[in-house]
Amino acid sequence: MSFSNKKEVGFCPDCDSRIKLKSPRLGQKVTCHACGTVLEIIGTSPVELDWAFDEGLDFDELATKLEDKKDRNAQREEKDFDLF
Image (cartoon, rainbow, N blue to C red; front, top):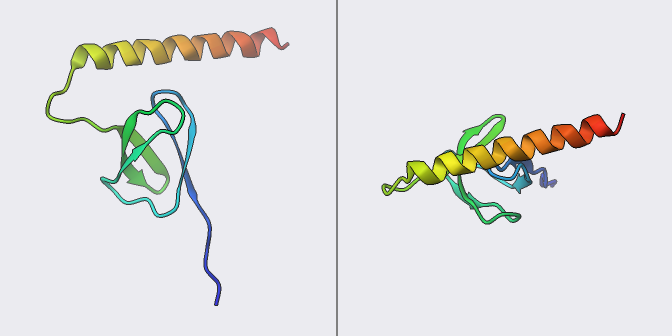
């Protein structure tokens, strides 16, 4: 008898860290090990993660997170460009 230890992989929308999941289910909440953001599984094939919102949604905080992510991506692209 063989059991599959295959894990699915998703990425944190906040810090882009890889998150390994054994048996992802739609609506399941997970926490990013790198930044502590609470996420929700919104797709299973492939695994898609998004911020888990509660009723007290703070649009200013969300806008700040999106801007921070854009800044990190821009810095990452600059580093990649500097390698050449």
